Length: 421
Image (cartoon, rainbow, N blue to C red):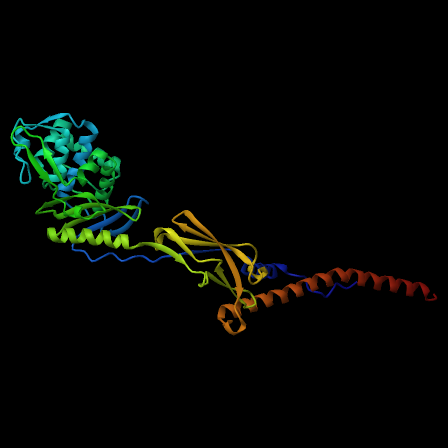
């Protein structure tokens, strides 16, 4: 008996093509991310950052990890250690070394006593170097021992690119930090109610036995009603530098700018950093008139998915933090025009903030624009159908072949038996 002349079916290629076609038609989830990164403002500072303490996100990073001299911004760390180890009414005593600190000071006398609260306000409002030195000696026992406490506390905060030697920020080659680390320091400082209150205080009466006096906050940014306060600094080596915090549009932002050429530049840069950052927070709008997504079927038919109604977020959002995910109720090719096609899920970072119904529509024939993608999809789909048909036909022929051959064998046997010998 001769073997069948039908070729053996090879389904693997056909199955792959069919699977590709089906995947094009049945992909029900689509994700779109908005990536409208805002530009950093033009700055005179050598390094700057803006940190969103509310969302724990960096908004602006301009040479954030350059190691620079922090000058009196150092006193923020000294203030943290002071309030964490002393009660407001605890009395501290000034040494002769503390009284001799220059240049910014309140003219402490050796042996003079101040409460811990007075020390805090003198550092935050008047940036008193002598008081910072006095606080360090009383907290740590000596300046070298206090430096160890400073570096240990900085490490606990997450300040990985900083090293501290002096409690007041007077210049030392081994005393440095970064804009990023300073932002983290400010965030930690604001967790202490005593420090937060001092930073916002415009004037404070210092209780001294020698000469009671009223100190005025040197921070010019306090005129802004959104300001939470800040700390400025200056040395010849550090230039002008500033940490400033604000609360607006539901977000607490911390701006740091280091090594500005002048005090005027320092305040202008800080204002620009905060203004630019807050401008990025706007209501997020989605109009029902605008297509959310256009889908091309394997036959080249254009579908549009639109919102059932327009949407505006209740909170101000940054566009680059927003992402959307489209979940369809079924395969697009099975959705009828005018029916609810699925849902648009709106996310701010990883948190879903809205789920809006989607309505399906097929574009009129006059708006159906041919495209290479549509043509390729149609060709792929038709080719898959053709190959599938051939594959099924081949399987049918294979099943039929043994029956035909068996019938022919039976017929021959009957003819042989009927023939005379």
